Image (cartoon, rainbow, N blue to C red; front, side, top):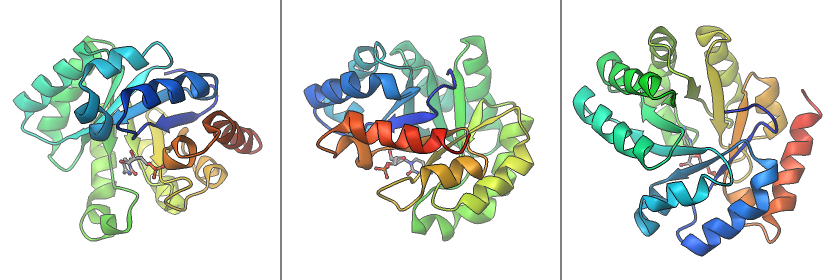
Length: 217
Ligand code: C5P
């Protein structure tokens, strides 16, 4: 994924035409489009190939299974045209290694969730976040997902993973995080969904975030 605008669109709409229209509009402002279960379940996996002409696709399926199943899932997602897959880290090193090994063979990316951006992530996930970040670095994943809602955690996680891995960070806008704050805290990319796709002018909403990021890099 090329680092230009440092913005990733989280395209959690459930209508194919709307997904395509929004992608067309924002293509010039995003480095990747993240799709997840809402869009893939509503429209089918072909949507990955259809959107990949606008930007590289990161499939946020938060894969969390035994090593063999992780590999089988990632194989299908890459075959559908995705450039990256988001996997959970809490399943442990062997599950993660299976996904990373396959991704490396296919020159694709695996991003590992350290902790999530919503309040409930504090119940169980945050305690494991640092260990998961270290494991992601040990197995040489492409990057980690860390919460824009808690920039201080992004800084902590950056210290653990060093500069070899990327940090992609959701939680900007609708969940309360600020794009400039989390970039300053050490994120490489911000992931933004509702603030862009629910806007009347998604391209202008994306541009505004890109301009905000430019001011702090
Ligand atoms: O609409 P909003 O900007 O809040 O979208 C954030 C996106 O990032 C959603 O697709 C959500 O599932 C995802 N995400 C997150 N926190 C994580 C991992 C992914 O909010 N740790």
